Length: 310
Image: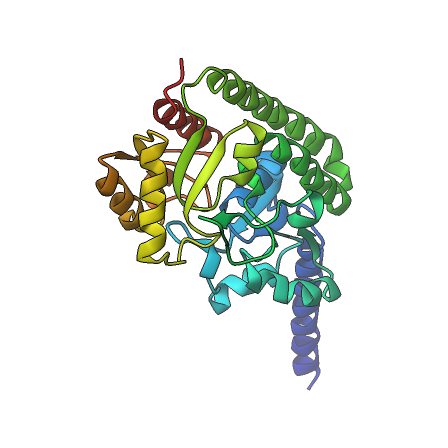
């Protein structure tokens, strides 16, 4: 009996120790170098958390590589990572509705939740050839590097609150990435300053914030979600408008079918180019080591080609 009691006591100590360890992990304490657990609804917020947190964070991206976030519904194991996180970052404004649904419950359970839509002045949803798109606001604000430079400060503050001992490191890494974003902004301003055209045609309405920042106009084939299907009449109207404006390139995206862009391009004898909204990376982009900065630079080069910039 005595031996059994000792074994039970030892077992209880092991269990309690494990719970204590998990509890400290859960609060963001760097146990065995594992760091603060951050979950992000989709790619850009995971990328920015990695840039700010560096080796001090473990970042999980809920929407997997190659998937489009607008209509994604997480699997149970993906939701488990969200509930196990110290910090959860999501976009809001309708692009990740599942995240908006679980945010109140996560807060009750002690997860620090960041709704990035709360950190920016939102644009109204754009129109598609005069018709309102689905949704009240445009959620694609991460495509404006000036806004991102402000939003990484929000991520920095959240990490410092969870892990105050490393606040100076988070601050330094934020400053370093902000400098890269400032350089990217300068490249866009310089690269788009002298162009023969100022209008682009895109497959879905993702580029309002970028267009506002750099004085461009956008003709959207589909609305805020790339899954929206424009009517044949809408496609005809867009083709006619693009022809009138002497547009020679129609932009399509990497994570959705290029069929709409190809249809309009074929109608007016134009070519197609990629304009990546950075809603997620493909497996090929990940393997190539692409990032927010590198893909935004690729977007700039394609913009310069389409707009006939000097």
